[in-house]
Image (cartoon, rainbow over all chains, first blue to last red; front, side, top):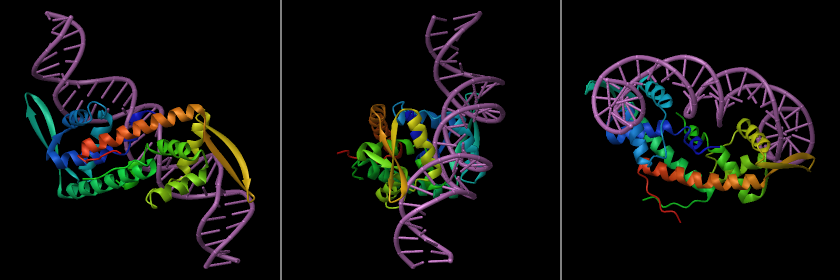
Length: 112
Length: 112
DNA sequence: TTATATACATAATAAAATTAGGTATAATTT
DNA sequence: AAATTATACCTAATTTTATTATGTATATAA
């Protein structure tokens, strides 16, 4: 097993969370932001990210707008109202998930 | 997305952890223990568990012994020395994983 | 006697990722 | 000047990992 296998299944939650915090982001920015937040530990692969973004858009959770910045195209993603709901739900579930990992692993946490 | 997707990739870590804590366990017992530890929230499916146990045995991380209890067969699994190493590694990685989730989600935790 | 609990297992399928490849422009390094 | 790295998008083939469904068998409870 390698470390990265733990992240399987969390990518969608991460994307929804970042978009809720930052309002709008483009794909490449998401990869960089996650790398930054985790001090280089977690690298989102583009092969996972872009299909996910497209799926979430198709599901009506994200809406897009394209901009040309310094002659390069950026496709910005933002949460729709449905996406905001889903993002809140995802946060609750992630907290429960972490709590349950702590139960299993006997880690002790104090939420602030 | 449903909640259970978060667990993807954590099953191996969970199994290695439980076996380290409890010494030896059989498959059905693992499913029940996880259900108990998480108050029914996490149900390990047998279709995921048994192939995983077989894989870990094949990799030399687990060793088995079969016992007949009340006319039913139990196949006990225990960590080999290599499995113990892997289990320790998995715990470190899981702690880092949770820490990084906290970084991304701005959750704050105090480890004891 | 029918259903639930215990206990193992596999096969078909689906979901979600990795790996590898592709296009294109801008900036930096050699 | 040329090559590499960074920015920015994307898809296709494959692999990994799980779900769902199914099967066997015994013991216990409704």
